[in-house]
Amino acid sequence: MCAASKGVRIRSSNVLCAPLLALATLTASGAPAQPLFEELRLVAPAAPGGGWDQTARVMQQVLQRERIVTTPVVENVPGAAGTIGLARFVGAERGNGDVLLVSGLIMLGGIVTYDSPVTLADAVPIARLTGEYEALAVPASSPFRTLEDLLAAFRADPESISWGGGSVGGSDQILAGLIASAVDVEPRRVNYIGYSGGGEALAAVLGGQVSVGVNGLAEFAAQVDAGTLRVLAVSSGERLPGLDSPTLRERGVDVEFENWRSIVAPPGITADERARLAATVDAMVRSSEWRELLARYRWLDRYLAGDEFTAFAAAEERRVRSILRELGASAATGEARAFDPYAAFVLLGLALFGVAAGVSLVRRRKSPHERAPPAWRPLALIGAGAALHVLLAETLGFIVAAALLFWLVARAFDTRHPTRDAVYALAVAVASYALFNLALDLPLPAGVLGAWL
Image (cartoon, rainbow, N blue to C red; front, top):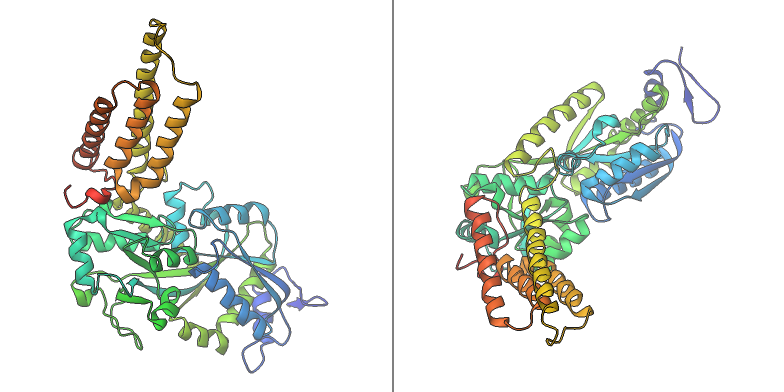
């Protein structure tokens, strides 16, 4: 026999009792006769404004209005495609039966890209909730009026087109890579810029900081309705009702893609606690309020619970790992393939100039009549060069930024030959750019020189 203890907590040795009791107490509207939780925390592992945050806040609204939970609370823990929030959730919430974490496809990509020691296998799966098609959008003032305009520029110079979206390794970058492959561009050449939250990504698109935005339809909806954003294409198989935008396939890009989001619980909870959380989610997705909000946000009902969801998540992780390998992400290092050699090259360049500086100082000691520069001057010039390189690499391109860095480092230790040092720094930057892009197939940003490179 299943029995409920005094209050709202359900106690039983049978994992099936809690959901059975919850379903047995449903009212005619589909909600339980009394709340299943007094308080339930919903952790969104991203900054406000993105898909995970939207999902958590829609859940909060439905759970409270349907009286499934008295006080649902949303907490945001952004960073690294959700892996920071996942690690905190698994560590700090262990054994807590009153908290859920929003997760999904993006988090699987983050786990691979950042080589996270904590994975979704460390959490307790509850259910897959929704699916969502993605959209490519540009500001209303963008020169790219159609998808064909964008793809023509992308084919001509892939690095000159920046794609802005969610965290690196997530569904937005995966879609950009799939599009590149479909139009015969090496996916590793996609210039993808990831943001920790949907709000940041949207601001970058609206501000023209990226060429095109890639995100879920719901995250672009308000700006599309207001006329500040224009959707070039959506990733659905067929046109969506109420949206006058073509699909990728209509425009000759053979890609159909769907993001999905899910809910997990922390490890260490009891079978009764897991069943109670599962019953809470089940009551939510059965409500008319949930179905209405799915339609409003253009989310697809992809509810899948229990062992079927566990098997689905494992299969998706294998699929994501395979796709990210094609995009140049390494499961071993968790970094984009172009990052480590690029960073190593900058450090190597600084080391070489450091050796040259040491030689220069030794020579100066042998020339006591030559006036030495102030002690702070070398450090100031090197610091300025490094800062300018970081600031200018994406906009002006690697060649310009690196040449400036190398010239300033050389000037830090030898003020006598500025023209010679400039020529040398530019030659090294050009040679390095050619080596990485042509010989090693590791793209560096072209910037303002993209039309000539």
